[in-house]
Amino acid sequence: MADFVNILTEEKNGVLYLTINREDKLNALNYATLEEIKSIFEEVADNKSIKAVIITGAGEKAFVAGADIREIADLNEVNARKFAENGQEIFAMIENCHKPVVAVTNGFALGGGCELAMACHIRVASANAKFGQPEVNLGIIPGYGGTQRLTHLIGRGKANELMMTGDMVDANEALRLGLVNHVLPTKAEAMAKAEDIVGKIMSKAPLAIGIIVDCVNAAFLPEENGYQTEANSFARCVKSGDYKEGTSAFLEKRKPVFKGE
Ligand code: COA
Image 1 (cartoon, rainbow, N blue to C red):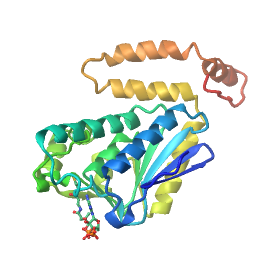
Image 2: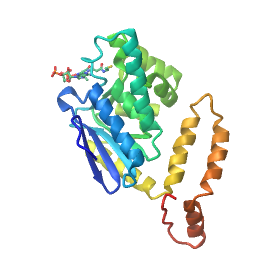
Image 3: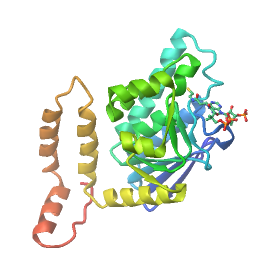
Image 4: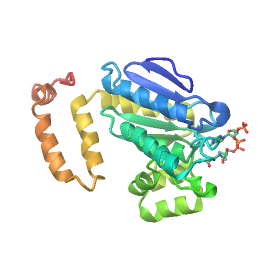
């Protein structure tokens, strides 16, 4: 993996750790950081040695405190649309990634930070995590898919309230709302929990994991019949060697060894 200016990457035991590293700006996402996320996810799709991704923010204070407000203070209608479409496209790459992507959120996950966490498949928070979509304070709205993903994750009423008030919720409230999957006391414990989860997922059939991503995402695509997607995808699974291995291993009372083929 190449070196990046705003992101630290480390690959360990098949897991790519992606740390947004602009601690003095509370890891705010400027354009350059978004482009780095994009090129990392292009590599994740192609690189066979990467089996899962964990995204976090540098330091204890913030996961990501939003899009970089300095860069969005002077938009016009044309480049504002491009700004939103570009962010949406990059976050869709995360959501559609065939390898599990887990966010470990520490401190502030605001605006684009909350949107980044929501684009991940699973979220694990530390107890000091705070979530919000405060764009309304700036006279704008979430633009990286937040109006859609927050509504999907926590329902219309609560999504309306959070986006219209700009209020933050703490980690336990986020857990209650279904915005995060787990809350652990510290960032280190949240990271260990995320590692447990990806470790478990990595022991399963990789093609089936990618297909689950497609099917779950199909549930949110109005143009797609998710049940048909599921049936077609189920049929795709049985063409794989992993299907033969999984069923044979069960019948032979041994652990399966999946190859992702
Ligand atoms: N974009 C650009 N810079 C940001 C930022 C953002 N979204 N969020 C924080 N920063 C910068 C601050 O400008 C400050 O930089 P400086 O030291 O050069 O002045 C630094 O990060 C530390 O932030 P600061 O505001 O001093 O910390 P705080 O503890 O007082 O407040 C927050 C923390 C998160 C409440 C506050 O930074 C904030 O409200 N940030 C904006 C959140 C937001 O609206 N996000 C959505 C953007 S669309």
